[in-house]
Length: 102
Image (cartoon, rainbow, N blue to C red; front, top):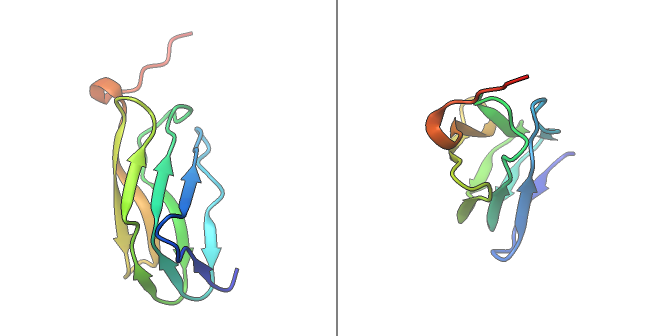
């Protein structure tokens, strides 16, 4: 997309990454953020940083709230204006580690 905007404070951007991540929003121009970011980490199998938005222009605003919908998970949002990315960082599952048993 050329530009990406979430202007309305009542708007929501919902993401549900799995082990492969998500389809990143790629904006060649400016982005405007407002509203709420909702993240469902139930199918996430790693704690690597997760890029949500790549942009080529400037960023205006930020999400008014970030809600992690998956119980006991946590994450922070980073607005990296130098790297032109909005991403989740410090992703932490319940208990702090992910274990897979077969």
